Length: 242
Figure 1 (tube, helix red, strand yellow):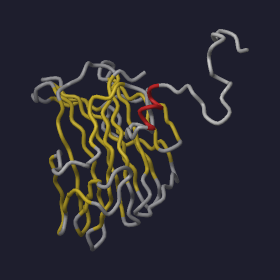
Figure 2: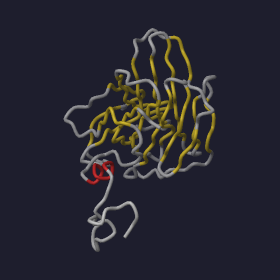
Figure 3: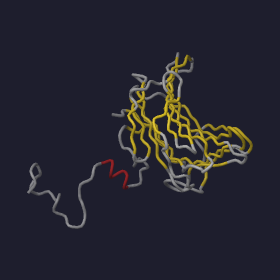
Figure 4: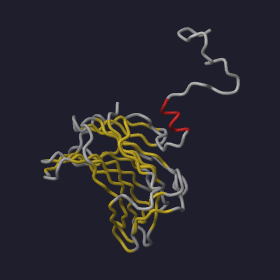
């Protein structure tokens, strides 16, 4: 028998099923949307299944709109449709504020589709201290597939060229950004099966009197003559990231 296991265990003895799984796997099998990166402690989840949208919204360009929608979803039956308005700089976005969790490593995860006409998808996580705010941005740009991080000097720095993601409307990609609100630095970025370590980059600092809080936003931008849509699903905020 295997060492360290009691002689009455069924582990390794079952022929058709495996008896031992951890709690994270158990939750995933029971329908949790936390299946992509299971590190950190979840403090907020929105799977957009509720009857009302729990985010503030905005946009630019004719026809811009944000709404719950049943056309596509990563999980469940609904997601959030971001229709960027017509014309150069057409946008649609969602954002909301949160009470600050414990300071330290905070993660923001969301899943999203792309439209062939999408120009940019921006993911933002911001920490307000009462006198300043510190911002982390990740920007993905089409059609060239450029992935960028916004550094402490206010510059978008390319971390990946020619990083192409499928733009079929029913293909959801998952992104997770982790920042450290103590050190004011990025930690890592995950998109699908790729991880980038970003601890060499600082968050952008600005003076601001907004009371202590966190802010998250997801922005869709496109530049064509007609309004275009993407879908966002399963937004997750975590603390205690390793």
